[in-house]
Image (cartoon, rainbow, N blue to C red):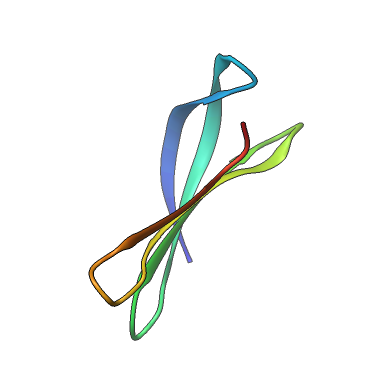
Length: 58
């Protein structure tokens, strides 16, 4: 797991600062974003089959 710095993501209609991390596996990289109070807010990963999987708190 690698720390990637701070980004902003729109959650509940407002841009909030979030911490970004990347988990590297043998097959894919998984990017995760966390907010100190809200917890997990977003996950982005390649599927390994040419598509991108995105989970986002809205």
